[in-house]
Image (cartoon, rainbow, N blue to C red; front, side, top):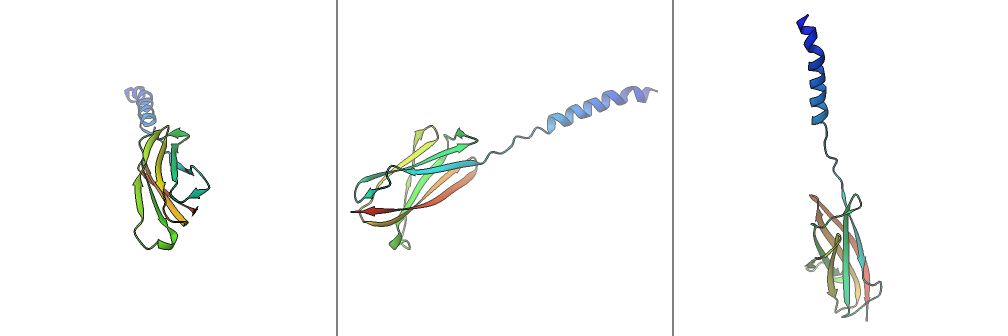
Length: 127
């Protein structure tokens, strides 16, 4: 009879502990959106590259962001890579000025929440 008296409190305690230990935090994947200050890019004029990093619609303000760019006709040569500056509210920027006309490619690299995000974009520089 004594054993039956302890079964219900024991089962209650086990279920309580099981409920506490199963509260895992769900991982939220970061996202990055790339923009440029202008669609029309001219030789030797400043161009601002921008990436906004978010996770679950919240700004990520501790990402490590850089931009890598090159002239497509010289794609086999060394690419230029610059670090982005924190502009606040999950936004990171870098400014470049290009001395040759042509088609350029740019990658942004963003390390946020233990993930590496990158995407490639192309644009044309005219005289």
